Length: 262
Image (tube, rainbow, N blue to C red; front, side, top):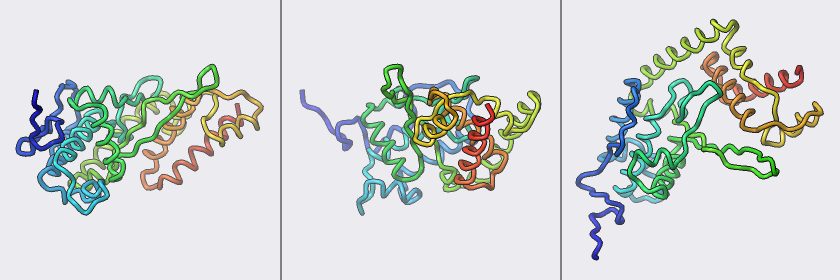
């Protein structure tokens, strides 16, 4: 049987009729700002110059191919679909911490193959539109298991499409909701985040040092990761003018203090 290529490397892409809608509905009630961002990012397909870093993600002087643009927009759309406004991370907040979503799960809403999705994510990361971090979990046998990668959207993407003030307003609302939650529990945002800390070990050298110093066994790095992330988010919401380095430094200080006092 002869395969027909409409111009998209046999991925089903038609340059004249790009598929930019998610194939499966998530039935999510998204904030209007996220719907607006999804719609505005589509402009990139017909005008790649509006996101020059993504257009140059192929590290070539040539314009990004149309099927790659389609893939990047689908990947970005599904990330925005599950975006948490307070942290700009892709996932679902739960009572036990933030749950990141796997590429396989996100892929099911796009209609793309996982490999095509991964290439699109690599482009978005290279373009500084999305950051991707790969957490690991220590297993009983001493091996490490990779967890769902933490995917976050840069606030500069909102700025690129004229949504800065709207984003600021929505994040302030998110901060107030979190502050209200903290108030009910008694305490400040930072104290609220501290209550989520559970004694445990870290997955990096600093954690091992800390664990050694305290004479404790290493704890689940996933628990540490969740606790540290929640604390960093609370600090960022409480001090929006702080750079990331200051937030991380303060989070580490509080963690060290908490572990030292335990």
